[in-house]
Amino acid sequence: MQIPRIGAAEAWRDAARGFLQQNIPPEALIWGGAETAPDLFGGGSVRGAARQVSVPRSFLALAGSVVWHTDPARFARLYAFLWRLRDTPHLMTDRGDPDLATLRRMEKNVHRCQHKMKAFVRFREIGDPKAARRSFAAWFEPTHHTVEPTAQFFARRFGDMDWRIYTPGISVLCEGGRLRFLKDCPRPDLPEDASEQLWVTYFQNIFNPARLKVKAMTSEMPKKYWKNMPEAAAIPELIAAAPARARAMAQAAPTLPPARVKQAQAQQARFASSWTQDSAALVAEVNSCTRCPLHCAATQAVHGAGPPDARLMVVGEQPGDLEDLQGLPFVGPAGQLFDAVAREVGLARDAVYVTNAVKHFKYRARGRRRIHQSPDRSEIAACAPWLEEEIRHVSPRLILALGATAAFALTGSAAPLAQRRGRVERRADGVAVLITYHPSYLLRVQDKDKEAAAQARAAFRGDLAQAWERVQPRQLAPRGSPTYTRPQRQPELRTPKL
Ligand code: URA
Image 1 (spheres, rainbow, N blue to C red):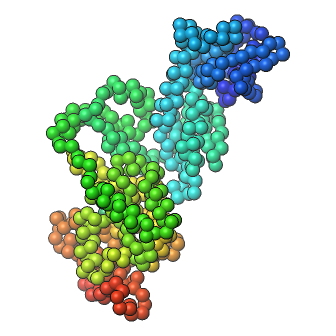
Image 2 (image 1 turned 135 degrees about the vertical axis):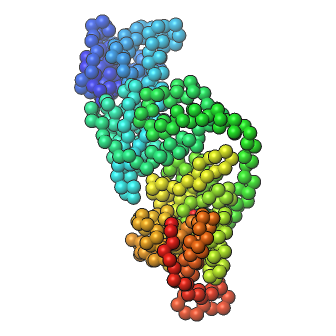
Image 3 (image 1 turned 30 degrees about the vertical axis):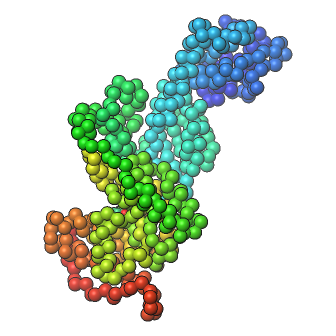
């Protein structure tokens, strides 16, 4: 009897039911791999012309897994057991039965393989990251035929995207939520993608050297899967460095839970409540965002802050260490520098909506310190819907982009900042974007080159003044409106080094 490679579970059930009804003993059958047929034991009992057969549900569950094992004798084993089960209904609970033990072992292998597949499939983006439905593909080499029984898991998890998992045997394609299985697809040439480095960084961050158990780790993440997992490249180095890191961790005092988080969250909730219901829903969505792995290591998502009808929106890169703890944007050193320069030009920060291109803090842990890492394109793209929603809600007259990440997130252009600083660019939706330095750049350059630092600061000051001026109403402002000081003319600037 030939069982097809796609739809093997149903085909085996159908065939086995037929043979059982016709009273065909196992030794009269040869099982192999061919064409499908409809359902078999339906509700757990078989009614045939020859005789009625009851099958325990526990057997159906067992067979439903064992059919995906790679043992060529799996179909024969199942049928032989089913044949015996017909006359010995308690066989399913006989722990000493060697045939049942073999089937249970095979079931366990299949379950384990499904678990590995769920954990170790690594998707790469193959379509336009800005498309309404993004497309991903992965190459995976399962030990058993687990693509079919595991496909629903991926369909549920990645319901809002199209994806494909190619394997040396059966591959699965999910397009518009519909699953399709294909045989013997060639291995695709998948693009190197930015999230490879992200996986490595993520793995490095979650790796706890103090809890390293190499045997347990390689049993959980067997070496045969490593070649398709970008983060596996970091493992040998992490293992080598683990003892020293563990010693350093033991010497460092534990990090205390951030005491200000509660207060900051309350502050944030107050701000959120000044928005419409729509925007409060956005805040809730961003809080539970898992569109990229950055949410795992960050304390919380940091939302924009400021009047929801601000004329000027300021966009930075991502929250820093303090912002991550306090839950508010630009409260750390970069924010303080921004505030100082804003005061100089009469820009009222209270009247401005301040946010970031990426809402979670990306960092690399070094001892107790968290070292800032720039977000990559996949992270910026993952966060883009939130930024776009904010722009839609606030509908600013002008957006001030602080630094290259913000400029890229807002305009889609990665052209060098030096050529764009101080200029206004138009987004596709018509909103004007004035591009300037990120205040962190001013802080970095301060210690290196005093003259360049002074020039960069003057340029930044000029840009803030220009931004503030551009969002003022044309007529004279009525009394009591936010203070506005006309900016002074800026001296001619040398193009600073970035
Ligand atoms: N840098 C940013 O880009 N944003 C912040 O909120 C803080 C530092």
